[in-house]
Length: 449
Ligand SMILES: *[C@@H]1O[C@H](CO)[C@@H](O)[C@H](O)[C@H]1NC(C)=O
Ligand SMILES: *[C@@H]1O[C@H](CO)[C@@H](O)[C@H](O)[C@H]1NC(C)=O
Ligand SMILES: *[C@@H]1O[C@H](CO)[C@@H](O)[C@H](O)[C@H]1NC(C)=O
Ligand SMILES: *[C@@H]1O[C@H](CO)[C@@H](O)[C@H](O)[C@H]1NC(C)=O
Ligand SMILES: CC(=O)N[C@H]1CO[C@H](CO)[C@@H](O)[C@@H]1O
Ligand SMILES: [Ca+2]
Image 1 (cartoon, rainbow, N blue to C red):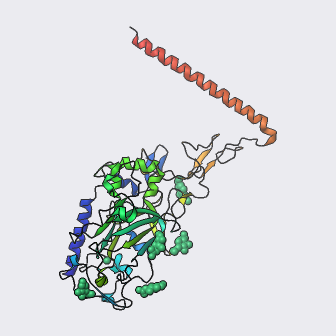
Image 2: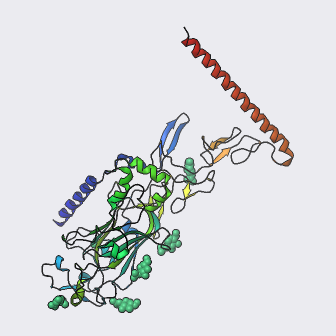
């Protein structure tokens, strides 16, 4: 019976995911890094920019609380619910006891499987030291750059905090920048004008705003979530139903600031003031005021409705968790945890990330020594697997650019060669001109009666 319910829930979740994802098929080009194609030269590879399939990133994070002893239950304490959450507001018969499994509320419960009833949640100690502020930092660290592709959603079982800041780090926690401010009164809390995400434009997309949308109004007790809206920001380029992802990809390919905005290694939730449900704090009932979070979703996969994706600079379609560390399985002859370098022997040109735009507009930017387009082997050399030029006898150099004689005594000969080269170019130009004239006269001949 229970299993059936679970299965039904899973199916419901899956269909909800499908119903709510509006991403077009073009995401599909991320699936593979290369595919086999037949060319005049036989079987070959066609290289594409690729991304790892998003997985549940909350599995791989480390959570740190500051202060470390802020979790409730040591020593055990009784707490009450806020009046609007409880039928009888003064019933304070809830207990938090870290030593008893059923009554403990450790941080792991913010990341466990949701769908249980009642929900499982982390809870802080209550605000017994009022008026000293009750402040908690919850830091999530991945030790790896990741890329947000969907909203961050935090579900509060207490009331949503009256003041909160979401911060992020791009350098493994050394420096932090605010992502978004949340308050019942932005001017009062942060001296910022309140703004909603739908007031942003393409030009102000990177602005850090203070929103009152997720703190105000306890009128509806099921209003439990605080969001950081990624999809709404994507929509500024891709349209309200994200139907024009090409436009967003184009922007991501060309604008580093925009890519960086959605990239992070760590997130920090700074809880600055708990919900009080009123303007006055009832100092006789301080055990009503605390933070409780049942779930944090750092969402991301457009296809699977799961979480964020490992950032591999579009050079990998798998991300491995090994020895406690996430790293990309790099393709395209790239290397490093984020595939942000060319492998040794493949440094014919500077490394570059793959493009978000699909082929033919985008490119995989594979690392190579030679190819048949820009990095041609010269003097009749043949490019072998993009790795080396096989040079004809007497020629050398990475691209066979060095002639039979190389060095001081040959300088003159070399410049002689250059002159020869120039001469051939001139000849070619002349030929081109000649053929142009011929074809022109031919056309003329055709047109004239
Ligand atoms: C937490 O630890 C600090 C010292 O680090 C101490 O002052 C404080 O009383 C402790 N809080 C609780 C609830 O144990
Ligand atoms: C939380 O983090 C901020 C900086 O992000 C720091 O100033 C503060 O001391 C930290 N600790 C607490 C308990 O707020
Ligand atoms: C983070 O990853 C590096 C390797 O890239 C490793 O040396 C370090 O110990 C890791 N840190 C943590 C806290 O896991
Ligand atoms: C809460 O405060 C009221 C008075 O405002 C008091 O009667 C009641 O006993 C208090 N409840 C608790 C649990 O302290
Ligand atoms: C070591 C490695 O990954 N080599 C690959 C480099 O790229 C060429 C194609 O460009 C592949 O054939 C190699 O396997
Ligand atoms: Ca939970």
